[in-house]
Image 1: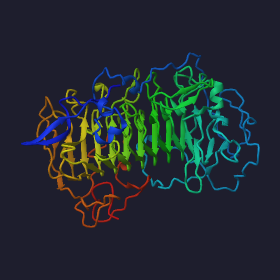
Image 2: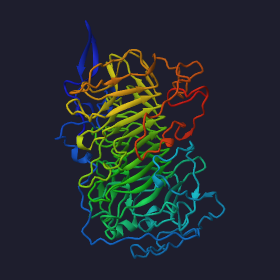
Image 3: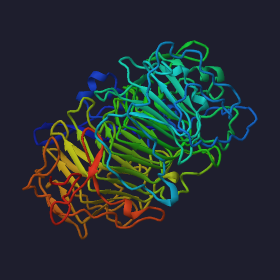
Length: 636
């Protein structure tokens, strides 16, 4: 798909001259990102979304709706084997009742002494209930800031991989035969595991499938690297994804077998946790099913899901890939979509491709998605987080802006409107986050950091409200390096009008222009887009107050009615922890939640009741005064 371009009429850099500021046009995206060494000196354009040039050569690589074959075999219905009540440590995997092939264990297993795990610390997999019983989003909960993890015991089979374990390498695990209640434990070792893993398992809410990393005593996560990886033995035998053209798409790829019903079979109830996943980058190679050395595609991901339901990724570090996490919803059938995607307390950073705007740290498309307690860093070329889902909830994260901080735009389903018909498709909730747009970051800053609506197809746009509350948003720049800074882009560019109800609703936030010399503009659009302020917000004193109306209407673009502004350039928060001081002007001002709750959203779960904890995770937000403090953190 197409990414935005700053044209000769769009300005981000400035220089001073006699008689006032003289704006200097920013160069086009390709020139900006020609070399990585220039990135720290350039302001990144608002790429990763925002209507633009339909002839962009990167368009096809960007599109979530991959035009790949789904195979020609006769579809058959797949059933999931019910979990048993026993919890064995598996040394002889069972016969796979789904594919009808044996998954023996003699080849490649440990020949020496196998570690006895019976007395080692262990835990039982938790049920996966998010999205069930009509509740969205799920309730928040405290999420540990520690990366430490232990072995898990499945309700069906448990596969232990690592030094001294039943399996020494990931290639030996029967990945394509995993069933409800299975657990794969991957134990830490000093060198990365180098195996491309494919999954097609379908668990249940009470017997999910867990791919679980077991950290060492220092809480180091085991790493799976795609750089120089081999293809897992069972994937080689099945030629997994070959007919669909999915070779080289991910370190962990979630798809189906030709024997799974192509229209209805969706892998799901899968948790991937406690791992470091890296190395799915086009400059890296792997060995395919034939043993041929090949490069990954530009859009390869650490986790690449063609479609999945109830997929959870937690406590993972994901770095050095084309896309960090990629989930698809192509809309080629009534069941061809991903759903209930949960991402909690992950560190996701430095994915993407320098010189390209079409790969991102997160690139998700699905029916309802939650990002909670994550540390989301910069991405090369693309956005820190790009999402095309319905009912998007982004809460209690730290986000460092790159091309964009948050790019929340329309689905790209092809023939079946599965996501678009969700009553929550036109709404998003961003609350309790720390969002930093910093000119001095290694990869620069964003000209249009938060994007809401659409970037290509207005008919599929998110047409209503982005609720933005209880956040701490910080701009770090100075004039003349950055003449002005913006926060929100509604819809696409000025020549693409957003829907009439598309707006941002802002309450209880800290908007801190820390230097104060860059001109502050809430809206990047010059003639469209609108923002409604509620309750109290902390705002920069000097603002570009646009009193214009939305193009072709009489609707004001800025609505301050009933709003109280606390103004200044010193909100009194720590520059390291971002917690307010005892004399901060943001204390006890209160945070109003959304002014209304759309049908099928759960209002009780959309209140600010947690805060981000470093380096990742969340804790309960404890009221310390007569009302909540503005921003993402409460006075301690």
